[in-house]
Length: 296
Image 1: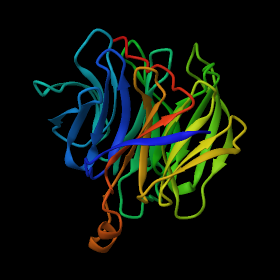
Image 2: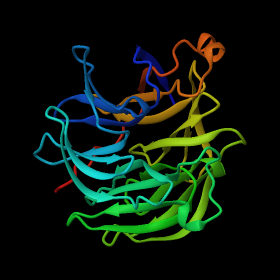
Image 3: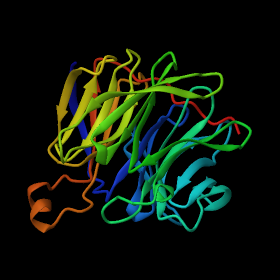
């Protein structure tokens, strides 16, 4: 694995997430979740735009032939127009649950998958009904549940042939792999793909054209590249401890955009990590896959 840091964007995000490249706009999008902001950056001319959101925007997807986004906000899934702030709800979480939505991603068949997390200080609930789930919004607008007993959903991604889905439950220090049926979206044969050491949480992931999983890791300042068999195939060491999300982009899709967070850092930690929350851009010797747009 070869990579080179080519730029650092001083965004100082509280929590940078859902890092997606828009091939038509030639722009990288992401959300600063705790600050209720959607950010768009054009690397060619250095222009950055910031759009406010009504609540925490956790993850999102692009929509075909539209300037609206498909968004997983903390309380549900909606269509959202950044320029006008227009909002159309599709699905809301039950209000009696102490959960909120988190990481989400499109599969290549046009479905949007998003998981929830336990929204309590210790990220735990004795009642199984109060734990996170993995939801799927299909192309007809129907929402179904596929996994439960989740603490923090993260790390969604699919192999190049769409036959394997990856999913992380961060506080369990685990990334799982599932057999995935592209036609039906059904999951089976859950197995452990990779683990992180105690205190290090697997966060957002992306998959390159060679089938390697790139995972941002919270707590050790790394992006780890895993081979399809789960072995470590390379690491990027960041100057900050809290890596949150990764995404490929650029005209050749060989640029890796790495988001980070300053959330939860005290004054001393911020002095030691002055670049916490910034966006780091690396040139790599591989390429990411094209982002699928929602066909709705």
